[in-house]
Length: 182
Ligand SMILES: [Zn+2]
Image (cartoon, rainbow, N blue to C red; front, top):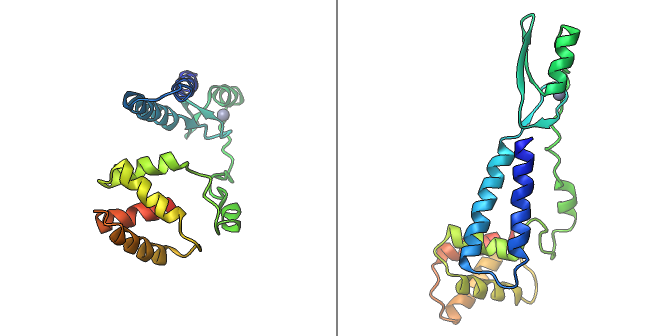
């Protein structure tokens, strides 16, 4: 299972880098690279059409006109049985991904899905804002006395940015606020 080992090795590398007492830009670049490799390895994992297990190597078998991509075990079983039994009601299990739990406590809590540094990096990637500017925007949002909806927050922060005479492009600001508040 090469892919699983690759993913595990990548995770290990990420843990090592994050464990350093001080990270440099080269470390961040390495993290991004490892993350990309990890992502590719995960993408390479395939689902057996018979038992739904995840494997990085499927075999394609064809018995009396029916073909299926299966894991090794299912392939052997099907060949021994001389037929491919496809389960008709194969359900995808990824649809209900915690949409209900998230709806319950959206009000003032920070979303659990991404950490602030991750969000800031995303803003950096999607806009031409600098880290320092993003931090300033974050600070302004954190300092909002009473939480408000996205539109009002954008209006409010835009004014604050003007007052503070920060030179921040309004579109970039919107993207940043949306991502921070997402
Ligand atoms: Zn299988």
